[in-house]
Length: 372
Image 1 (cartoon, rainbow, N blue to C red):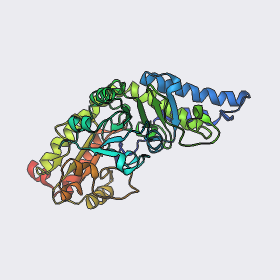
Image 2: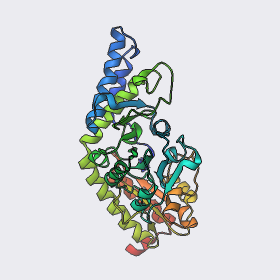
Image 3: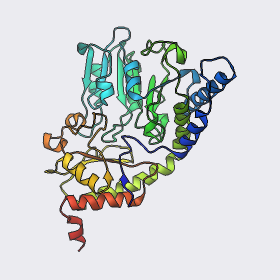
Image 4: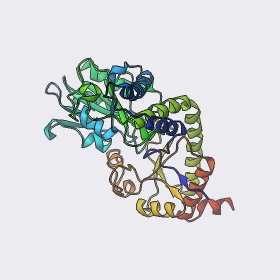
């Protein structure tokens, strides 16, 4: 029996469209910086992809910079500007919380509600002219949306710049929600593209920050290094496919989530679903069963052929207490027991059923006993 892969917030299987685009691009010989015919052919692949990204975000192609993904891009974009501070929510991804270039005394951490939503009053109090505000569109662990439009208006009113982490957003929420951000960044492997490639879209009134990766001056001197032509082609193809299928998939994921959470409550009535009352990504459920350790549950599920995560998958494979859930007020035992289930473009109904059957065994077969 095929395994059930339910860890799409960590990474997704490569879409067929991306694979085909990458294979075709691998046969393009030239270096995109070369001026001969082969080089121009490679450059054309990169520029077509740039146009695809720009079109998706309603930006100019010149505003798009290709990078290696979210972590590098956060390290680049989150630099001090005009002597301002960094204002960041307490539930951001580690690449934002740890990847910035601000001195510790220039970082202002903004609390969130028990549902994981940024406290706007606290955010407004923390923002000052010249500040950089960094906020996720949707949280990688809980799927909770942040009010990006309101945050953008608030930042603009105080002369601050908003950098939006859209890594979990592509194909899962409407990109129009992000259009007021000064900068947006994402990683291709979260929506069916290859690993190791991403992009930033800079739309601020001023120039983007200085280059983080320096060298030959590629990407308009903002990100040096020979472009990863095949992966950039795969990114664009996956982006097109993700946006094409977005409405259908959001409806499908919503049905999966409703089924999963209803059955979860039957299997373990004491289970806590984090961010349950907030607006969330349709593909994400993060929960804990009191008294159940996440590491043991992950091992049991894996042995039963089910792949899920404990919170973020970006901590070198470690299972540790979630800073996101701690910020939301979850107790230590509950935060340490969190399991994240995330569906995606290739998820099948039988994957959900397999997960629920495996969870039922872990929790003592309660659903089976009830049904009997």
